Length: 349
Image (cartoon, rainbow, N blue to C red; front, side, top):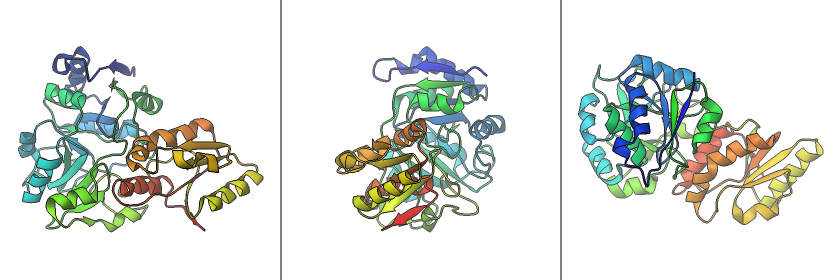
């Protein structure tokens, strides 16, 4: 399959009538799948009402079929098509955070969406992305769009169109290239089908922000379990994700201790990588040292995380050691992704 690459300037182009967006919408209506930019990562979109389109998403990614997809919309009115009810707390969260990096779990209306998109669950995750190209595309095609991250399943999510092409060239109909994404980690997923909302996946909207809006919010205990739940309600709960090619270890301890680990592996003849931040790059003597943002501004770490993990693949290291980060604010999402990427492998001082 030839994979088209359509370049779109979100700041200049008249998006609603942009010929590339019109072409991409045509593919979606024909039940093909395309990659599209959001404010978090690039998504792999297909018609959420079509078993054919959803099957193509799973096949292109190599994604397990029991891993549900998030449905993307451009208008809150679309919710009536496939949700059974909209709880009051969900309305508050939509008012405050949509469009934006927040996915809300609702009880679904039976028969309105492909059962494959929701993995046969009685719930559905929905979000409205804060990206003008994505919203223009959704309005142009007039469909609810199922869209997981546009990468090979288990690998780091794509934050550029080139990342998409590295993984899926020849497997999908096209890529709408609008430049790098901003947030860098996927949306927060919060289950609003219970009295107290539950975070199923941390992301761009923090626990602190959610609690300021609706009061108490719980964190699902499955977040700390690599294998997750037997039947996940949201992406990222069950399977290993975001992993670079080389084994990744999270290091709990001082940077002196991390450097000792580096030296041990170098003495074994291995090529060693270190994931750190700009403040600490000069403290490590490894074969490859990558600064992933600034520790003083964790938003920069989130924005660069997946690109950094992919850079390690290009550097052909044998093992990677990573610093750990606070679990407040967006740090919770960063550590969740690193724990998944490492398969919960941790070395403590």
